[in-house]
Length: 365
Ligand code: NAD
Image 1: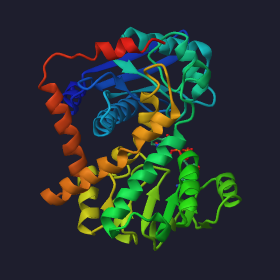
Image 2: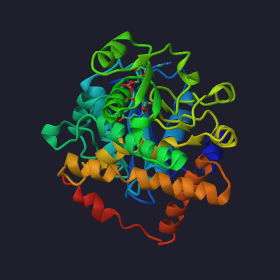
Image 3: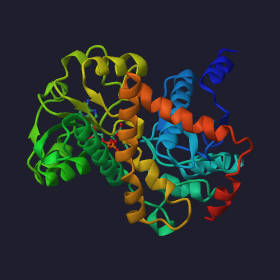
Image 4: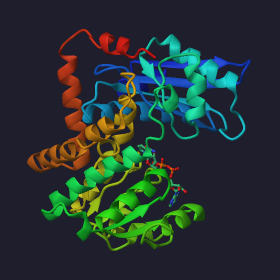
Protein backbone atom coordinates (compact mmCIF):
# COMPACT_ATOMS: atom_id res chain seq x y z
CA UNK A 1 0.00 0.00 0.00
CA UNK A 2 2.97 2.29 0.62
CA UNK A 3 3.63 2.34 -3.13
CA UNK A 4 0.19 3.79 -3.82
CA UNK A 5 0.78 6.41 -1.15
CA UNK A 6 4.07 7.36 -2.81
CA UNK A 7 2.46 7.55 -6.25
CA UNK A 8 -0.31 9.76 -4.93
CA UNK A 9 2.20 12.05 -3.19
CA UNK A 10 4.38 12.43 -6.27
CA UNK A 11 1.46 12.61 -8.70
CA UNK A 12 2.36 9.86 -11.18
CA UNK A 13 -0.23 9.04 -13.81
CA UNK A 14 0.91 5.54 -14.66
CA UNK A 15 3.59 3.01 -13.72
CA UNK A 16 4.12 -0.10 -15.82
CA UNK A 17 6.02 -3.16 -14.58
CA UNK A 18 7.56 -4.97 -17.56
CA UNK A 19 8.46 -8.61 -17.08
CA UNK A 20 9.61 -11.09 -19.72
CA UNK A 21 11.50 -13.96 -18.03
CA UNK A 22 12.26 -15.57 -21.42
CA UNK A 23 14.69 -12.76 -22.22
CA UNK A 24 15.53 -11.70 -18.64
CA UNK A 25 13.65 -8.39 -18.83
CA UNK A 26 12.77 -6.70 -15.56
CA UNK A 27 11.88 -3.08 -16.19
CA UNK A 28 9.72 -0.26 -14.90
CA UNK A 29 8.27 2.56 -16.99
CA UNK A 30 7.01 5.57 -15.03
CA UNK A 31 4.84 8.22 -16.66
CA UNK A 32 4.68 11.15 -14.29
CA UNK A 33 2.67 13.69 -16.26
CA UNK A 34 1.19 13.96 -19.74
CA UNK A 35 -0.48 17.32 -19.19
CA UNK A 36 1.85 19.18 -21.58
CA UNK A 37 2.51 16.27 -23.94
CA UNK A 38 3.81 12.69 -24.01
CA UNK A 39 6.18 11.76 -21.19
CA UNK A 40 9.68 11.74 -22.67
CA UNK A 41 12.70 10.56 -20.71
CA UNK A 42 15.64 8.22 -21.01
CA UNK A 43 16.00 4.51 -20.30
CA UNK A 44 18.51 3.77 -17.54
CA UNK A 45 20.11 0.31 -17.29
CA UNK A 46 21.60 -0.24 -13.86
CA UNK A 47 22.20 -3.23 -11.52
CA UNK A 48 19.80 -1.95 -8.85
CA UNK A 49 20.16 -3.91 -5.63
CA UNK A 50 16.42 -4.10 -5.03
CA UNK A 51 13.07 -3.44 -6.66
CA UNK A 52 12.48 -0.56 -4.23
CA UNK A 53 15.73 1.12 -5.25
CA UNK A 54 14.77 0.87 -8.94
CA UNK A 55 11.27 2.15 -8.28
CA UNK A 56 12.48 5.12 -6.23
CA UNK A 57 14.92 6.06 -8.98
CA UNK A 58 12.39 5.86 -11.82
CA UNK A 59 9.74 7.78 -9.87
CA UNK A 60 12.14 10.62 -8.99
CA UNK A 61 13.67 10.79 -12.44
CA UNK A 62 10.32 10.82 -14.27
CA UNK A 63 9.03 13.66 -12.10
CA UNK A 64 12.25 15.56 -12.81
CA UNK A 65 11.55 15.21 -16.54
CA UNK A 66 8.12 16.83 -16.11
CA UNK A 67 9.78 19.87 -14.54
CA UNK A 68 12.56 19.96 -17.11
CA UNK A 69 10.17 19.90 -20.09
CA UNK A 70 7.79 22.41 -18.49
CA UNK A 71 10.50 24.92 -17.71
CA UNK A 72 12.06 24.58 -21.17
CA UNK A 73 8.68 25.49 -22.69
CA UNK A 74 8.40 22.15 -24.53
CA UNK A 75 5.15 20.36 -25.33
CA UNK A 76 6.29 17.32 -23.41
CA UNK A 77 5.39 15.65 -20.15
CA UNK A 78 7.69 13.61 -17.95
CA UNK A 79 8.54 9.93 -18.09
CA UNK A 80 11.49 7.65 -17.47
CA UNK A 81 12.27 3.94 -17.55
CA UNK A 82 14.74 1.61 -15.87
CA UNK A 83 15.93 -1.87 -16.79
CA UNK A 84 17.29 -3.79 -13.83
CA UNK A 85 20.52 -5.29 -15.14
CA UNK A 86 24.20 -4.78 -15.83
CA UNK A 87 24.76 -2.84 -19.03
CA UNK A 88 28.17 -4.50 -19.50
CA UNK A 89 26.93 -8.11 -19.39
CA UNK A 90 23.13 -8.27 -19.71
CA UNK A 91 22.38 -6.54 -23.02
CA UNK A 92 20.80 -8.47 -25.90
CA UNK A 93 18.70 -7.82 -28.97
CA UNK A 94 15.74 -9.74 -27.44
CA UNK A 95 15.93 -7.70 -24.24
CA UNK A 96 15.64 -4.31 -25.96
CA UNK A 97 13.07 -5.48 -28.50
CA UNK A 98 10.95 -6.87 -25.68
CA UNK A 99 11.27 -3.55 -23.83
CA UNK A 100 10.32 -1.77 -27.09
CA UNK A 101 7.04 -3.73 -27.20
CA UNK A 102 6.16 -2.54 -23.71
CA UNK A 103 6.89 1.05 -24.77
CA UNK A 104 4.71 0.53 -27.84
CA UNK A 105 1.84 -0.79 -25.72
CA UNK A 106 1.56 2.70 -24.15
CA UNK A 107 0.66 4.13 -27.56
CA UNK A 108 2.84 7.24 -27.27
CA UNK A 109 2.17 8.15 -23.63
CA UNK A 110 5.86 7.44 -23.03
CA UNK A 111 8.76 8.14 -25.42
CA UNK A 112 12.13 6.67 -24.55
CA UNK A 113 15.75 7.79 -25.17
CA UNK A 114 19.32 7.07 -24.00
CA UNK A 115 20.36 7.45 -20.39
CA UNK A 116 23.06 5.99 -18.13
CA UNK A 117 23.85 2.46 -19.35
CA UNK A 118 22.09 2.69 -22.73
CA UNK A 119 23.25 4.05 -26.08
CA UNK A 120 22.23 4.70 -29.67
CA UNK A 121 22.57 1.02 -30.63
CA UNK A 122 20.06 0.05 -27.93
CA UNK A 123 17.67 2.74 -29.20
CA UNK A 124 17.97 1.27 -32.68
CA UNK A 125 16.85 -2.13 -31.34
CA UNK A 126 13.92 -0.52 -29.53
CA UNK A 127 13.10 1.30 -32.77
CA UNK A 128 12.55 -2.09 -34.45
CA UNK A 129 9.47 -2.48 -32.25
CA UNK A 130 8.15 1.03 -31.71
CA UNK A 131 8.33 4.53 -33.13
CA UNK A 132 8.16 6.00 -29.60
CA UNK A 133 11.91 6.32 -29.26
CA UNK A 134 14.38 9.19 -29.76
CA UNK A 135 18.17 9.32 -29.84
CA UNK A 136 18.27 6.90 -32.76
CA UNK A 137 20.96 7.11 -35.41
CA UNK A 138 21.10 10.18 -37.70
CA UNK A 139 20.67 7.66 -40.56
CA UNK A 140 17.13 7.06 -39.25
CA UNK A 141 16.28 10.70 -38.70
CA UNK A 142 17.82 10.77 -35.21
CA UNK A 143 19.84 13.49 -33.54
CA UNK A 144 22.87 11.47 -32.36
CA UNK A 145 24.92 12.50 -29.31
CA UNK A 146 23.04 15.17 -27.28
CA UNK A 147 26.05 16.23 -25.13
CA UNK A 148 27.19 19.03 -27.38
CA UNK A 149 23.74 20.64 -27.26
CA UNK A 150 23.54 20.13 -23.49
CA UNK A 151 26.93 21.87 -23.12
CA UNK A 152 25.76 24.72 -25.37
CA UNK A 153 22.70 25.13 -23.14
CA UNK A 154 24.86 25.17 -20.00
CA UNK A 155 26.96 27.90 -21.61
CA UNK A 156 23.79 29.99 -22.21
CA UNK A 157 22.69 29.43 -18.61
CA UNK A 158 26.13 30.27 -17.24
CA UNK A 159 26.10 33.51 -19.26
CA UNK A 160 22.74 34.42 -17.69
CA UNK A 161 24.03 33.67 -14.18
CA UNK A 162 27.21 35.71 -14.77
CA UNK A 163 25.13 38.63 -16.10
CA UNK A 164 22.88 38.47 -13.03
CA UNK A 165 25.71 38.21 -10.52
CA UNK A 166 28.29 40.56 -12.10
CA UNK A 167 26.19 42.73 -14.45
CA UNK A 168 28.32 41.73 -17.45
CA UNK A 169 27.88 38.75 -19.77
CA UNK A 170 31.57 38.38 -20.51
CA UNK A 171 32.62 34.83 -19.66
CA UNK A 172 36.20 35.62 -20.69
CA UNK A 173 36.72 37.55 -17.44
CA UNK A 174 35.55 34.65 -15.25
CA UNK A 175 37.12 31.56 -13.72
CA UNK A 176 35.22 28.27 -13.94
CA UNK A 177 35.83 24.96 -12.12
CA UNK A 178 34.41 21.93 -13.97
CA UNK A 179 33.75 18.69 -12.10
CA UNK A 180 33.69 15.87 -14.67
CA UNK A 181 35.33 16.18 -18.08
CA UNK A 182 33.24 13.48 -19.80
CA UNK A 183 30.86 14.13 -22.68
CA UNK A 184 29.26 17.39 -21.51
CA UNK A 185 32.23 18.63 -19.43
CA UNK A 186 34.56 18.21 -22.41
CA UNK A 187 32.41 20.32 -24.78
CA UNK A 188 31.72 22.88 -22.08
CA UNK A 189 35.45 23.29 -21.35
CA UNK A 190 36.18 23.74 -25.07
CA UNK A 191 33.50 26.42 -25.45
CA UNK A 192 34.62 28.27 -22.31
CA UNK A 193 38.24 28.16 -23.47
CA UNK A 194 37.14 29.81 -26.72
CA UNK A 195 35.57 32.61 -24.64
CA UNK A 196 38.89 33.04 -22.83
CA UNK A 197 37.75 31.90 -19.37
CA UNK A 198 40.30 30.71 -16.79
CA UNK A 199 39.57 26.98 -16.34
CA UNK A 200 40.03 24.43 -13.58
CA UNK A 201 38.95 20.84 -14.08
CA UNK A 202 38.91 17.39 -12.55
CA UNK A 203 37.91 13.83 -13.39
CA UNK A 204 38.50 10.37 -11.95
CA UNK A 205 39.27 9.10 -15.44
CA UNK A 206 42.83 9.93 -16.58
CA UNK A 207 41.88 9.47 -20.24
CA UNK A 208 39.28 12.24 -19.99
CA UNK A 209 41.87 14.53 -18.37
CA UNK A 210 44.53 13.78 -20.99
CA UNK A 211 42.11 14.39 -23.86
CA UNK A 212 41.03 17.87 -22.78
CA UNK A 213 44.50 18.88 -21.51
CA UNK A 214 46.00 18.18 -24.91
CA UNK A 215 43.51 20.56 -26.55
CA UNK A 216 43.07 23.57 -24.24
CA UNK A 217 44.66 25.41 -21.34
CA UNK A 218 43.09 23.97 -18.16
CA UNK A 219 44.50 23.61 -14.63
CA UNK A 220 43.80 20.08 -13.35
CA UNK A 221 43.07 19.61 -9.64
CA UNK A 222 42.22 16.50 -7.60
CA UNK A 223 38.60 15.22 -7.42
CA UNK A 224 38.45 16.18 -3.73
CA UNK A 225 39.72 19.72 -4.36
CA UNK A 226 37.37 20.88 -7.12
CA UNK A 227 34.52 21.91 -4.81
CA UNK A 228 36.81 24.22 -2.89
CA UNK A 229 38.59 25.92 -5.79
CA UNK A 230 38.55 29.70 -5.46
CA UNK A 231 36.62 30.60 -8.62
CA UNK A 232 33.60 32.53 -9.96
CA UNK A 233 31.62 29.54 -11.25
CA UNK A 234 31.47 25.94 -10.12
CA UNK A 235 30.14 23.70 -12.92
CA UNK A 236 29.09 20.22 -11.73
CA UNK A 237 29.17 17.90 -14.78
CA UNK A 238 29.58 14.50 -13.12
CA UNK A 239 27.47 13.29 -10.22
CA UNK A 240 24.24 14.10 -8.45
CA UNK A 241 23.84 15.07 -4.77
CA UNK A 242 27.21 16.85 -4.63
CA UNK A 243 25.71 19.97 -3.06
CA UNK A 244 24.82 19.13 0.53
CA UNK A 245 25.29 20.07 4.19
CA UNK A 246 28.94 18.99 4.07
CA UNK A 247 30.04 20.66 0.81
CA UNK A 248 28.03 23.92 0.64
CA UNK A 249 29.80 25.62 3.62
CA UNK A 250 33.17 25.07 1.89
CA UNK A 251 32.31 26.40 -1.58
CA UNK A 252 34.40 29.39 -2.69
CA UNK A 253 32.42 30.25 -5.84
CA UNK A 254 29.74 32.89 -6.49
CA UNK A 255 27.71 30.78 -8.94
CA UNK A 256 26.82 27.10 -9.39
CA UNK A 257 25.96 26.37 -13.03
CA UNK A 258 26.49 22.91 -14.51
CA UNK A 259 24.94 19.95 -16.33
CA UNK A 260 24.67 17.24 -13.67
CA UNK A 261 21.19 16.02 -12.75
CA UNK A 262 19.92 16.23 -9.15
CA UNK A 263 22.85 18.36 -7.93
CA UNK A 264 21.17 19.20 -4.62
CA UNK A 265 21.06 16.30 -2.18
CA UNK A 266 17.90 17.84 -0.73
CA UNK A 267 16.09 20.36 -2.98
CA UNK A 268 14.63 22.58 -0.28
CA UNK A 269 17.36 22.40 2.35
CA UNK A 270 20.37 22.76 0.05
CA UNK A 271 18.72 25.30 -2.28
CA UNK A 272 18.08 27.47 0.78
CA UNK A 273 21.64 26.99 2.08
CA UNK A 274 23.08 28.25 -1.23
CA UNK A 275 20.64 31.18 -1.23
CA UNK A 276 21.65 32.15 2.31
CA UNK A 277 25.33 32.05 1.36
CA UNK A 278 24.62 34.40 -1.57
CA UNK A 279 25.70 31.79 -4.11
CA UNK A 280 23.56 31.97 -7.25
CA UNK A 281 22.36 28.47 -8.13
CA UNK A 282 21.19 27.80 -11.70
CA UNK A 283 18.64 24.99 -11.11
CA UNK A 284 19.88 21.83 -12.84
CA UNK A 285 16.68 20.94 -14.66
CA UNK A 286 16.53 24.42 -16.21
CA UNK A 287 20.17 24.76 -17.26
CA UNK A 288 20.69 21.18 -18.53
CA UNK A 289 17.59 21.01 -20.75
CA UNK A 290 19.63 21.22 -23.99
CA UNK A 291 19.72 17.43 -24.39
CA UNK A 292 15.95 17.19 -24.04
CA UNK A 293 15.41 20.11 -26.44
CA UNK A 294 17.66 18.25 -28.87
CA UNK A 295 15.64 15.00 -28.86
CA UNK A 296 12.39 16.98 -28.89
CA UNK A 297 13.53 18.28 -32.26
CA UNK A 298 13.65 14.69 -33.53
CA UNK A 299 9.95 14.13 -32.99
CA UNK A 300 8.73 16.04 -36.02
CA UNK A 301 10.82 13.70 -38.18
CA UNK A 302 13.00 16.45 -39.72
CA UNK A 303 15.78 16.90 -37.18
CA UNK A 304 17.83 20.03 -37.68
CA UNK A 305 20.83 20.77 -35.44
CA UNK A 306 20.73 24.52 -36.11
CA UNK A 307 17.12 24.69 -34.93
CA UNK A 308 17.91 22.63 -31.81
CA UNK A 309 20.77 25.00 -30.92
CA UNK A 310 18.58 28.03 -31.56
CA UNK A 311 15.87 26.70 -29.24
CA UNK A 312 18.50 25.88 -26.63
CA UNK A 313 19.46 29.57 -26.49
CA UNK A 314 16.12 30.06 -24.70
CA UNK A 315 17.76 28.66 -21.55
CA UNK A 316 19.30 32.14 -21.04
CA UNK A 317 15.88 33.79 -20.73
CA UNK A 318 14.34 30.87 -18.82
CA UNK A 319 17.01 31.24 -16.15
CA UNK A 320 16.66 35.03 -16.01
CA UNK A 321 12.94 34.42 -15.32
CA UNK A 322 13.86 32.07 -12.46
CA UNK A 323 16.31 34.58 -10.95
CA UNK A 324 13.70 37.35 -11.13
CA UNK A 325 10.99 35.28 -9.42
CA UNK A 326 13.46 34.25 -6.70
CA UNK A 327 14.36 37.89 -6.09
CA UNK A 328 10.74 39.11 -6.08
CA UNK A 329 9.57 36.40 -3.71
CA UNK A 330 12.72 36.20 -1.57
CA UNK A 331 13.02 32.45 -2.16
CA UNK A 332 15.79 30.19 -3.40
CA UNK A 333 16.20 29.74 -7.15
CA UNK A 334 15.41 26.02 -6.67
CA UNK A 335 11.97 26.92 -5.29
CA UNK A 336 11.44 29.62 -7.95
CA UNK A 337 12.19 27.15 -10.77
CA UNK A 338 9.71 24.61 -9.41
CA UNK A 339 7.08 27.33 -9.03
CA UNK A 340 7.49 28.46 -12.65
CA UNK A 341 7.23 24.90 -14.00
CA UNK A 342 4.20 24.11 -11.81
CA UNK A 343 2.44 27.31 -12.92
CA UNK A 344 2.71 26.32 -16.57
CA UNK A 345 1.42 22.80 -15.90
CA UNK A 346 -1.51 24.12 -13.82
CA UNK A 347 -2.46 26.63 -16.52
CA UNK A 348 -2.55 23.93 -19.20
CA UNK A 349 -4.33 21.49 -16.88
CA UNK A 350 -7.03 24.14 -16.57
CA UNK A 351 -7.81 23.70 -20.28
CA UNK A 352 -9.43 20.35 -19.56
CA UNK A 353 -9.12 17.55 -22.13
CA UNK A 354 -5.83 16.97 -23.93
CA UNK A 355 -5.09 17.87 -27.49
CA UNK A 356 -1.60 16.65 -28.06
CA UNK A 357 -2.83 13.71 -30.16
CA UNK A 358 -2.12 15.89 -33.20
CA UNK A 359 1.46 16.31 -32.08
CA UNK A 360 1.80 12.55 -31.62
CA UNK A 361 0.55 11.72 -35.09
CA UNK A 362 3.11 14.17 -36.47
CA UNK A 363 5.78 11.71 -35.35
CA UNK A 364 5.52 9.61 -38.44
CA UNK A 365 8.60 7.43 -37.96
P1 NAD B 1 29.80 11.18 -18.82
O1 NAD B 1 29.68 9.86 -18.15
O2 NAD B 1 30.21 11.25 -20.24
O3 NAD B 1 30.83 12.11 -18.00
C1 NAD B 1 30.87 12.17 -16.62
C2 NAD B 1 32.33 12.30 -16.21
O4 NAD B 1 32.38 12.50 -14.80
C3 NAD B 1 33.15 11.04 -16.52
O5 NAD B 1 34.31 11.41 -17.27
C4 NAD B 1 33.51 10.50 -15.14
O6 NAD B 1 34.76 9.88 -15.09
C5 NAD B 1 33.48 11.77 -14.31
N1 NAD B 1 33.31 11.53 -12.87
C6 NAD B 1 32.55 10.58 -12.25
N2 NAD B 1 32.67 10.68 -10.93
C7 NAD B 1 33.51 11.72 -10.70
C8 NAD B 1 34.03 12.33 -9.53
N3 NAD B 1 33.73 11.88 -8.32
N4 NAD B 1 34.85 13.40 -9.66
C9 NAD B 1 35.18 13.85 -10.88
N5 NAD B 1 34.73 13.31 -12.03
C10 NAD B 1 33.91 12.27 -11.93
O7 NAD B 1 28.40 11.91 -18.57
P2 NAD B 1 27.82 13.19 -19.34
O8 NAD B 1 26.94 12.73 -20.44
O9 NAD B 1 28.92 14.16 -19.61
O10 NAD B 1 26.85 13.78 -18.21
C11 NAD B 1 27.37 14.49 -17.10
C12 NAD B 1 26.23 14.88 -16.16
O11 NAD B 1 25.28 15.69 -16.86
C13 NAD B 1 25.42 13.68 -15.64
O12 NAD B 1 24.96 13.99 -14.34
C14 NAD B 1 24.23 13.61 -16.58
O13 NAD B 1 23.11 12.99 -15.96
C15 NAD B 1 23.99 15.09 -16.83
N6 NAD B 1 23.30 15.36 -18.10
C16 NAD B 1 23.85 14.96 -19.28
C17 NAD B 1 23.21 15.24 -20.49
C18 NAD B 1 23.80 14.82 -21.81
O14 NAD B 1 23.34 15.32 -22.86
N7 NAD B 1 24.81 13.97 -21.84
C19 NAD B 1 21.98 15.93 -20.47
C20 NAD B 1 21.45 16.36 -19.25
C21 NAD B 1 22.13 16.07 -18.07
